[in-house]
Image (cartoon, rainbow, N blue to C red):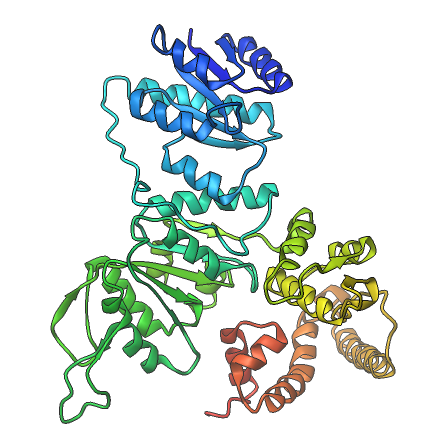
Length: 488
């Protein structure tokens, strides 16, 4: 029968854990502080320890370090009501088996207990060779990675685990969720933290420039268009390279990256000399990998490398409980006048909004409101208006009413013609009407909309795609279909 220790000064937590663990036929001992538990280790040892982070006297993290130094074979499950990125990283750093945030579901605890005990049994006769990657220095505090919600606790765990690995990493999430900042945190908490971190961003229509920026240019010859240049893959050395928006990279450059990742080597553009790839590559994407692959924007082989480890960032609308703490943090920015406050009504309005631009949009909104505020207090009236939504409750403009009327007229005419045609064939029924009505409608209205948006952006397809809410490849397909492509 396995012996489990609970080290926690909260009586209610200890009572609930003990009762549930004993129901599962585990033996349980409870300690309200670390010191008596450490003394008891000299006499007998548990099979597993459930350890709270905040304790009287020595903290749980300090106890964890002692346990892993003197008793590495004992798995430890950390528990905390104050989870943040720093704690998650320290938990991984000290090789905690699991990291649970309070309040937690008791079944979640039981599952972690079963896994920890099973792993200990499998490793019973082996020596734990795990070494912390974090002894090199104290990591800096993260900036703007904020939130105590369950969704963000999961992100903190993913960052900590990604930092302890060395594989290719994908960070995906909507615009404004903080993908680049997460990449910085992964590098900062990794074994490469004292080495360079460089970044590159793919720009549509700049394929050759990106290729040279990443791989460098070879020795100039008679036909060379570029002078000798060292690429970021080489400049990063043994550090980290962040490549922003993998879906915007041309397929040709994706193929070069695949070869570099798989062969651990690459050549400069126009050169044949092989150079060793030493850096870790991180990628970001605002679109799901499956969508990019299905739309032909991402090579499946590169996608397989990206799926080895992925950090998914939640949208701000999915964690509204984090908005108020974020607002209070943003108000302490050094760029704002000191002592700025905000009313309850204004806070409630910020919580109500959907934030399509996520954390970035919230931060800019708070800063703009602070500049408008008089008397150092942000009122409801100081908030900039929320962008117009497509809600069905919104009042219909005259142009919209005319458009809806025209669509109804067009649809009725199409249906009448199709019905008249069907009745001329005795074998036809209403169900036999050709199912092309929606496609016919799109063919009638899409060209005008696409051309207007492209004209508005002077032919810049990237900007047009952003305005339309389409991926660049989708817009490219539509412009070719309607012969709107200026290159054709």
